[in-house]
Length: 387
Ligand code: AMP
Image 1 (cartoon, rainbow, N blue to C red):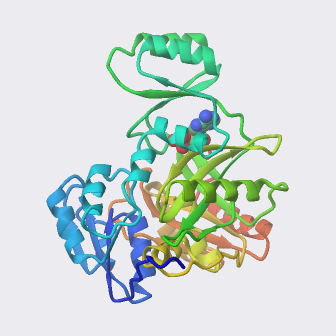
Image 2: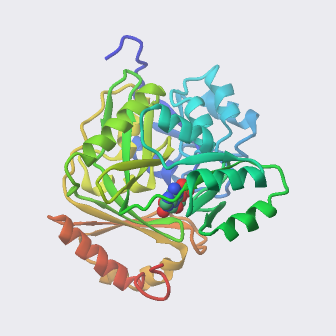
């Protein structure tokens, strides 16, 4: 371990910017090891509040509130990538904030993000920066159709995106681009699977990757993650090597997820990064020797990282607002290998992430069969939910 690694033993205070479900699961992992938790979130209430020792209710750009959080925290972390990077940079100057602002600055802008992925040696979709109708026409000619136009900043879970299939689609969008803005046009990647890999890197430059997982999205939101191997030769190794290299080149501390596409010829393409624990890593709570949350805490606190080992194949299903009524009505019918995690959010809005279910089995097929049964019980396989 490097000499300058800062060791933070309990009951030190871990200050979390962002109090959603990721903050809650980080806090639960840290509390069980004896740490104290402070959280800053604009929501009243926020999901992390009930498991935190100190709660600051303030907007993320409220520097004074962020400084109060920093003043009582021994180490700071963020769980939400839209925390303003300048606020993180300001805190970093006087507090221990090992994740830092630089990786946020990159991940908050799709153009910078794509450039960073390419610079780290990863294959990406062909892309062009676009800031006017004319540039969109030129970009479409360069990357080809179909293509996807994405806003550079502020889009998430598929929001702020337009699929362009025909020259007429390009013309319609180009003609309407009369307000200044920054976009990126990406060639459509004909993927056979969506995947993600999570790496956790420590300040001592150690890094550990979680197993590569397969993801299925519905309406732009992660629906299901399958963890249990079975990848074509070399695919998982390639993804993990990219993740390690990217994390090292950008001095990442803590968890970083890379979302990827698998192509028919078994090559892979990097889509985007998230410099924090990731929804596709929730399965690690029940299916891995260490969870992504505990590993993230270990890296912040200067502890040696554990090697993540898959202990049982696991299929994770997200629970959204529209599933809650059925979940509670069918509560006792869920199979015992389906471990339900609820975040305690009081308002079950359509599309809002309320919890997840980890379905475990001795084989991936068994875990998937349990997940299929859960989807049927929760009516996720009908009523237009499949799309
Ligand atoms: P993103 O916000 O970049 O994660 O995109 C949301 C979803 O849109 C992804 O999970 C993919 O299903 C799809 N998508 C995004 N970019 C592309 C692309 N270049 N080619 C094909 N599908 C894409």
